[in-house]
Image (tube, rainbow, N blue to C red; front, side, top):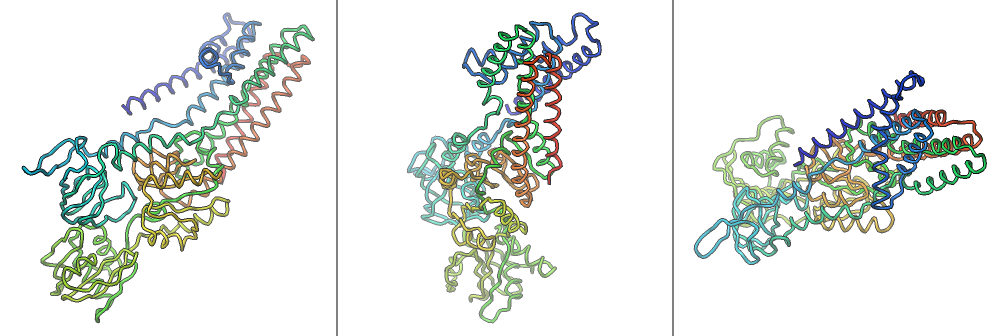
Length: 609
């Protein structure tokens, strides 16, 4: 389906470009023929470029009584044809179609985020009954059913663990980079992925009430609160039409010269006004592309210029989404090097992200492989046990040490691996996500531009504070599920502070879509987040964000200058047309010159730094 939409969009654009080329060639032929050919070649431009404008204007008037810029263009076309000024009519039609094509090229492409979210929904579930285990359609699961989830399977419904211990990847819901250990009584959510151990659960919320289905509905509805910016020429079209008709009628009555009235309609045609916005947006998008941004929504940069707050997700956005060892705290006579080596050896065969991080960081720090281990045993939801250098080592959660009769260290908010060697506590390794080296610079640069940073994360308060503090982010919201992030975005924007949301995970998709502007990390971000966003940061280099906001504001300045110039040119041309200085052909040429100046001024945005 998406391939067909893309193919249709591409073929339509190619057809419009072909019509423009033919129209331009016909105008050139008409200009050099200088009236020697019959019929006038400019008729080709009038037909190819003018008929779509007339059709659009008629449909808008008849079906919606909607007066837009194309109504005035249609009046100018018809008036020019009626008095035999075919070249002027072709010029007007041609330049307006260029503006329409530029505008179309800046609108959003078809997005598949909803479809990808739907594909996350599990198709089957394992229901446990008195007669054994049976595989059923996930949509038929009822509240109260007992379900079994094996390693690698997706949780089919919201509920609580009855038996078994495991680790569950909850990134789809919370954005956490580290799987969460689960045991009896702990909640699990549909769409999350079981990592290591099998467990039985009782289904509490199923079908449309499940967390994943609620998130799909959030993404579908989140766009409703986002304002769409209307083209300035269309916004003022009614008044322009009334002014043009009044000026033309008054001039005809006073002078008795129909040619002057037609000239007024031609010069009042808002060619430069229509081009003022799309040309600036197109140039700014070109600049943004060179700095690693893919602008998916045509008006995203217009909205970005108004942003007052930048809400950041933590994991994968301000951080790399990779845990690393921050501290090694030995005890009972072990040295830091010995504790690190024993723990890395025990984790050498582990598939857990924390275990892999320990091995990777040990080998990076010491420049040698982690020690070999024997008798390796994975304890789902708790950690690992192995023999390293002749020492029995247990590394994992406090619950693992308790099961061995070893007193665990006091609880903290930090992510830790507790280690016991030879049946005694040997120390703790503290891990945390790695902050991007450019995060502090980015936050500071945005604040200097008047954009206040905010942290929205699914991680717990301790992890959020550990990131926000060094970066200087004062407004922090932790433990956020997708609906919580959406609610925070609404709260911030309800106070008149447009928000730019920057995120990378599936759980960020509703907030990315609801925010005034959504920016997704294109390299490490999920496809669903990218599809929900207005802009994708292809390189994941957040240092470029301040450039993007500055570019958006410079673009709006360029648009205002373009609009002021085009309106001034229009009124000056009308005054000259009233006095008979301009005829329809010269009036059309004046408009073309104004349009060229607007395009050249917009093109300066390509070089903006």
